[in-house]
Amino acid sequence: LERGKHAVTHTSQVPLTVEVSLPRGTREASSQYRSTNDPSLQLHKRFLIVDTPGHGKLRYHASEQIVTSQNLRGIMFIVDAADLAPDSSGLRDAAEYLHDILLMLQKRLTLSKTSKASRALPVLITANKTDLFTALPAPAVKSVLEKEINRIRASRAKGLLDSGIGMSYLSSDPEKDWVGDAGNGDFNFMQMAEVDVQVNVVAGSLTASQQTNVLQSWEWLASNL
Image 1 (cartoon, rainbow, N blue to C red):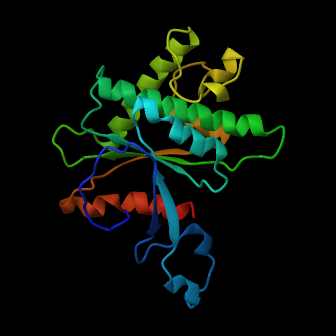
Image 2 (image 1 turned 180 degrees about the vertical axis):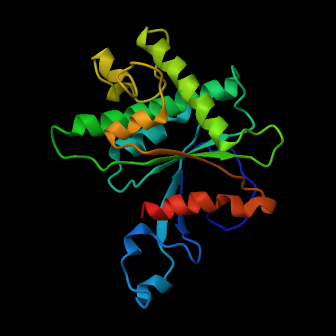
């Protein structure tokens, strides 16, 4: 996203902030009512992306950004679409992390209603590596994550698992620590809309031969600027 081309990636150990500009022809939502002759439309809209480590011991960096950032516009949660097989460690790890982030967003909004309301934050789940044969398509990624989060929610309601991130931000009331529809029924991402958290799932690939597959991510980014 930063360089506009495929680049070698490395596992991050610390947060990384980069300045990114929307590609030509992609307009941010705040410009939709401007005249096509407005000179500001000729400028590339620039914004910051903060990449936080996904390792379990380093996820507190993400929780700090969610809780303390005043200019956060949305969250992109990237998963490996080729490592989400049922009962796999990849699926379990991704779903646990996503569960914790969604719960934090839910509490961020509901707890703030007694004071200054927090900005609603959308979430884009980006299933990467869809160029691989074993990768799941976006609808399947959505389905397996919802089912796994449902299992995690049920387990944590029984006190069998620890949260992993953001424990200090959780309530002493167990019922308020259930993500989604108060722990009733099966979990699905639509339940997050009740707390103004819109969750979407797209699939793509960042390989050199699949650059066009990131278009949906660019459009999502533009819609939240």
